[in-house]
Image (tube, rainbow, N blue to C red):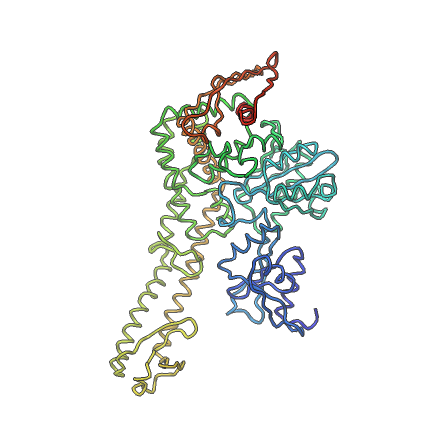
Length: 634
């Protein structure tokens, strides 16, 4: 567009690289949008549309959002299916010669949003890659906030929809063949509230997909990752990884493993059965209350809540694994006091999985590190209690739970107890952690004394009784003299500003003090930021240990919750058999029983097997409990 101003030319050039995104363009304390993006964003975000001189005859449509509140606006746009490219100032405007350099630092999409305000901590936020090759669907699912990264293959449209329903991704990326297949994409988008987009063919090149996975996991062959039999799955996983690299523009260091699975590892539950059983939400109201999850989930941590949901969505089918879980719950039932102690210690534990995601992302602030430290403080107490237990699952959890004492000590030494949220304005680093920072802090503190002494001296010398040294960001330090004392102002006072009822002045001595104090402050802020980043990077370097510990905490939280529910509701440990027999005596529907008051639920028996009792025909009037009986058995 000829005639555009230099800044708007820079904007248009950046926008050309991200035509499918709304561009948030950083100008000072705001992210601004222009032209079509401004029209779209002002409508969707319900913010004021204004205009800006841009070098053309007509002003460019413009709207903006404050940088410190950007997360809530991002979430609104992403929820509506938009992608947002964030262009940040890459240099200090004060030091820039000419136009400030700007670059897109990341693209936010429904499946890659990381803001804790935007996400439900009890649910994973999945990005799913689907590739359709021949009759096979390769599927890769990744939660970027936790580092969970899965891959599988299925055949048939129905099996694919079952996987989509199970993971409920917020975004699906796919190849053109899937986009043009017989899948009803509009129904998919509406039913699952998922954003679906097809990507260019280069994302799905077999060679480039294999290459990106090998490079990310630092392996020479994919066989070691367990992907030898997943040709279509590898392409889906590679496309997801390439897409994440391209949108997030960082190393994704917290994605340290990829987990291949076959749908046969877990009970196959088709979409309609999942809905009818009301596993995680009710059929009609889509509410959590009234679902199986509502009954079983008494977890204390966000990690435990997510794992509980996953376990309910993916029931085990191997008898040995089921019995191992039962034994863990039984042992916790028998150690009531220890279980309650564990649950008490789990209470203060924050979401370690998402915290380490933000730390490796370099988006964690000082308060995140304090939350991280406070969580680690609980680990030695939990491990100490876990030593009492002998069941295989709980012993494994104990072994996997690293107390991470070195990281606790690092944060304890480095970060103040109540740090600010903002990282570039100092006040984060503890006294005694760094000698240079202590010196600069001392100069800054001394400066206040020097200013007070200068103020007292000048007040005595001039006779101006209400003479005050004040400060603001525009004028720096200055003497303020009210108009009633204007006649007493000496010659060496240099006027800075005139107000309605006062004058503002400086002196050579005040200027020198200002240079020393503000110089020390600027250096201190810069040094504190560097020290904070160093602490954050040291923690990020231990991502494997932290994620293993986080998974162990999640598992312990789930089993403690299941134990609590079992004892509270007087559940019985069932005997698992492989004879194709279901024999339930005095069975109860866990949800309906809790929804009814005063023990009104009537227990009932069920006998089903592969011989004479293969089918039961259930009859009775409406509201007699037919569907309740079917669901409790299922």
